[in-house]
Image 1: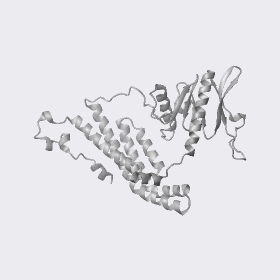
Image 2 (image 1 turned 90 degrees about the horizontal axis):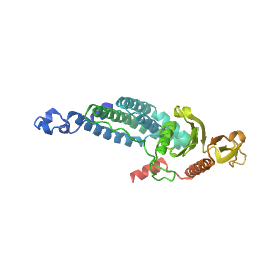
Image 3 (image 1 turned 45 degrees about the vertical axis):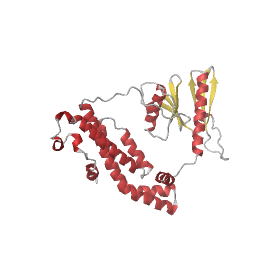
Image 4 (image 1 turned 180 degrees about the vertical axis):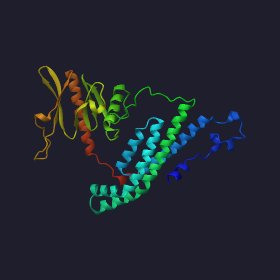
Length: 324
């Protein structure tokens, strides 16, 4: 099956890419250079295979699709693209072999009863076919990308260097914000913390002296400044599910932000502030900055709960909208 899909990606127009059998009668000055032809051919194959694999990804379960995106995202060089292609192929084959079992169990857990069993079994049977095919297409796409990068580096083309980090495409209100280098760096740190999980997006970042505060749509992170990895630098994480509120506190002339966690258990079911040991405090260099941080954290928390109250479309409704 892999050979079938890869062979289907062969160039249908050899005359455009320097095949001697087709270009023997064409003047030399009009022929496409070899490096340029390899570059163009690899680009077409990569786009074609990538589009097909992304289309097939819509039919898979969320966990399998997230793992596919993680494998493809972390490839940067031509060698890493080739390794990612092999991993994607293996991931698709293994996913196809285990699809019936994993999807059926997941259907019973999420939906329950006979309907969940039948729904999961149906998804598993579909995944038995689509997951290996998507893996083969991922292999073809990543291999074509590796060939493209090799042709780019070995030919007259020079790979453009990034002059700035990727911008934040979504602000707290859901609009496109102006580019700020600090926000771009904060977004990059968040992606490293969450392994590029797209469900959690960046809101704000503030430097409070010896550490920085990274505010996302699901949690607030406190990171030490210095030569650390992102995970080593994080010394405090508070998720909005556990946060009661954020306040400004003063003690002996120092200013702090206090993150009050919710009580573990409440008999009434109403959220209550927890005991003193569940109120971590972080020192801030000025009261103005502490007030600003408190407002940003409480605002992000309110956005999180608004998102929880929104009605979300089910997978079947999304598919019906796409079909219509």
